Amino acid sequence: MPALKKRLERESTVGHLPALEEILHGLRRFTSDPKTTVFQISEQVSRDPSLAVRLLRMANSAYYTRAEPVVSLEEAVLFLGVEQVRTVSVTMGCVERMSPQDKSGFKWPDFWRHCIATAYVARILGRFFHRKHADPELDYIAGLLHDVGKLVIAMLFPDGFGYVFNKAREQKLSFCEAEQNYFDTDHAALGGWYLERQNMPPAVFETVRCHHNWTLSVENQEIAAIVNVANHFAHENALGCSGNMQERVGSFTEIPSWRFLLDTMTLKEDASIIEQRLREESQRLGGLVEVILPGTTAPLTVTPPSQESTLPAAAIPHAPGSSSQLALPG
Ligand SMILES: [Fe+2]
Ligand SMILES: [Fe+2]
Image (cartoon, rainbow, N blue to C red; front, side):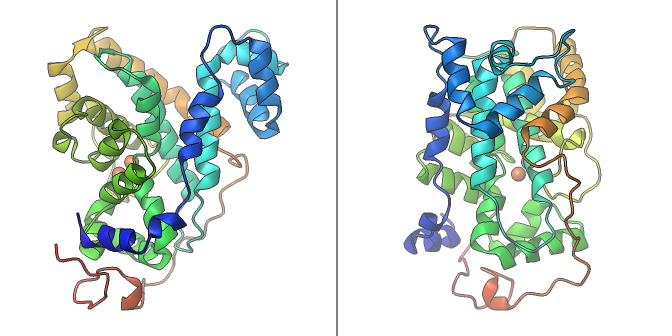
């Protein structure tokens, strides 16, 4: 375990990060028990006006084609189904709980768009394969939280996060490369560490830890590969932005994780049909994400950093040449 993580643990830093138990609670909040009526779920939803508004907007969005508009909450719940109700509730809970106050110019609303799109694609993708332990909710949560390590860094070391963000832009590095250069660890490792301490299921924290290097996952390689593909797909189709300033990426059909899924798992459809369906989804997903994400109707007003990034060495956990106490041995 990198020393940065050790230090975070020693200082009980995780106590300064948002507790995510609510998320797991949220998954249970809207039950799939067939005995629960639409009226009961609608009643629960109506106690949360912000959720109710989003569900109504979602039911009437272009993502779903309907001849008649949905006007009542009950109708919206019936139309969308309990899974979507749960998804929107959990997603909003995450977004609202984790809002860093850094001044780096990093576009957090775009970051969340990327995460939500990745989550949807992971869940859609997961359903195309016959899997022993399929759990669409875990696919969604792992996709939603795959980049949560960036939030961890931004919440604990806002100056360090801004420094890395600006260095990645200036030097045209991937975010992981910039993080490794300056922290000796990256958001994948930190995200996995954080989620493990939040008592998330191993399938989630291991997938998050391995989302860029899915082959390192031992027990959860399928879901790690699925999230890797979904992440790539979100980048490829410019669904949000997670801060990577590199050139556009190629097709997901050419990446090793996609080949791995096709070669090792049993498909429910022909691969070409799956690829075509995903492409169709990409046309519609952007609109759906806009409905879910709070406050996205207003234009984003994040000022991009305009000057050469400078940061006192003490604020950087491990800048090269720095003697910071947070320096890692490797
Ligand atoms: Fe990532
Ligand atoms: Fe990502």
